[in-house]
Length: 447
Image (cartoon, rainbow, N blue to C red; front, side, top):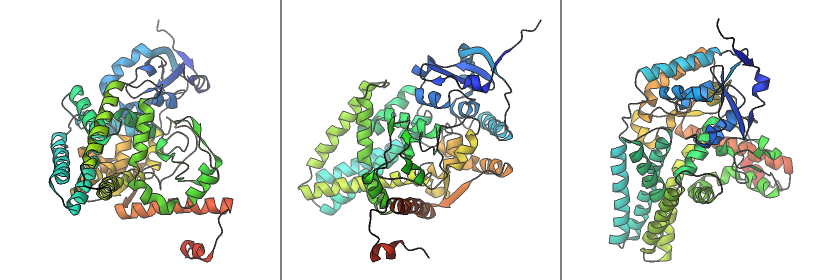
């Protein structure tokens, strides 16, 4: 006689979504991932954010087929009552399976080895320019080249955090530490922790750290309610200081981006010296110390403080291009308040993301971010295949009447500034602490 299945309701499942009690549903089967959250390669946060609900689409997006065989040891014996799959999710899962059959997740043809050589060349030329030339112009160009090498190292850090870009896990780790921690001074561990949270909770004002830039920036007036950041575990106070800074954010955006690296340095230090569990903490700290040894020494080799400042500003400003790129894909897209939902995971990814239209010969410049929608739906997909799968994603979105937003690089910049400007004007109207003189009216008048 067949054994009858045990079911729990969605309401009962939602009771298991707190630290120390994490249950999720995958294809209607209930799994207890409480203990696994401590060892989960992607960290505990994605599991915590998606606990108490069905997370099948997110699981499909983030895990290879081999991962399914490990689920049984977490099975509770329960099934989700009235479990159903939307037509969007069905098509998404079919598409992921088709890409897997085509071997696209395994074919990493974007030439990480070649990119590493280019980074080494740019770095070497920059160091040579500092040490072997007395020209201030050469020193300026050397700073710019160093900035370009940081941008390219950032693409490797981004890719290697999603999938294995080298021939083995060991070499993948070496590439991460060398290009991230040692060369750029950014903790790859912090990056993965932050970036995984962003992907899972794309454009949630409370759960996506990439939209939590108070008191400097606010992409929506919803942030004026002093929402809580569940990533940073603090309240994002919209006080008088935040109100003032946000009121001018459409003017300060690009200058701030020029020095956004400073925030990444700070976040890396806070992460590595926090009480949270940090995998390979010693490696990470050693890599950061390498950066803070060679970079100050290189700057000190310049002949005077004026050129040293020029070199640092040039290198940081060039890297600011990449910081702008990260903002373009999400700042002007739809945002929401609350936790991410596994039931409409596909829709949330497309709603909160913008693709950048460009020719294929400019793919090197965007590092895969030009296909941000495709990347968010299939984060394990090597960026060399994103252009290839884009028509399939567009077709799926068209079939289900879902957003698929695109813009040129320049238009995306305009859209981002317009978003910031709109929130800035609302902040001024809300508070009214800043006098609206004739200059202000002239600059901000519509029409």
